[in-house]
Image (cartoon, rainbow, N blue to C red; front, side):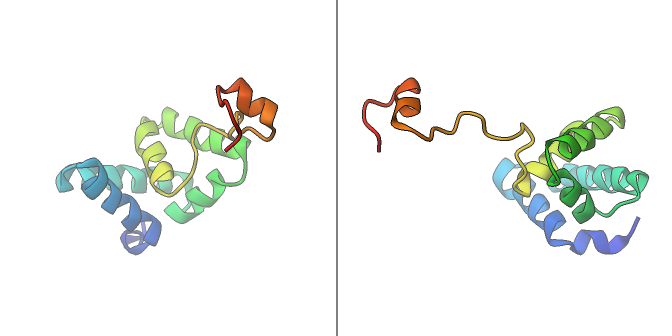
Length: 111
């Protein structure tokens, strides 16, 4: 594990989000960061590389989450991805493009 991982902006953003947005105690946040670092070390990639891999498409994102689940850190990895802007639930499938699709979702008038 590279100690400079703590200085990565993606890790700092996640840490800040856990403490300030979610209200996770600093000690528990440190445990989650250590769990992420252990997972990354086992995957032989830095956290920002894990993030990039998860952004390489639905298949890669699903693989990252499956590997995290196998390692027992699925929620930690999902949290890291979410706080860094990755939609862990896949691509949007209900984004309306037409007035008819808006009506199907309950809109009376197109905005």
